[in-house]
Image (spheres, rainbow, N blue to C red):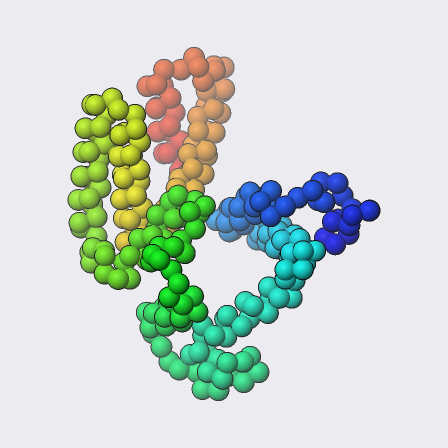
Length: 256
């Protein structure tokens, strides 16, 4: 990376990059890692993890050029954080001496983690939600917001009312559609998605991953539709909705 960024001999593309220009690639590489995991393609996962690691190295190189921090500083910082946030594993606060680990339940560990994290950040936040990045993908951000407010009791204790809320938001969306007010429709559609993501959280399902799997399933079934249509010597545009639905049902019966 140092060679790629070298002012005299480096690559023109790499030299002109900044934190902001690299950020979209980081997000893309993260999704490619998740995709490889979902497909259980571990050879591809190794490659994608390398690409993601390269993103970290890229940021570290730019920061070192600006005398901000180095890759070693990044690694040291995360080691110190893990030691600090796992006193039940590292009671002495170092990796050379484990001491006697304290037995905690998973819930107690999660609570301890949050307490330590809050102490690290101090009382500087104006809002409980200040540390939820606004740049985070919308569904993921919704779940993070819900998790935050849940910790102070602003949450339903069971899943039943969440279904009721979704129905309520769907009714409001339908009313907004009757008004033919595009902005109001957009607002109510957002409320529906927020409520659905809340249901996913209550069910301990990642809405992003669940939707991603559905996208993959749709691609697979639609690909089968394309094959069936082609086998009959037709084009997709030649088919009625009823015909396409019939092909779709066949793809489902085939287990796709």
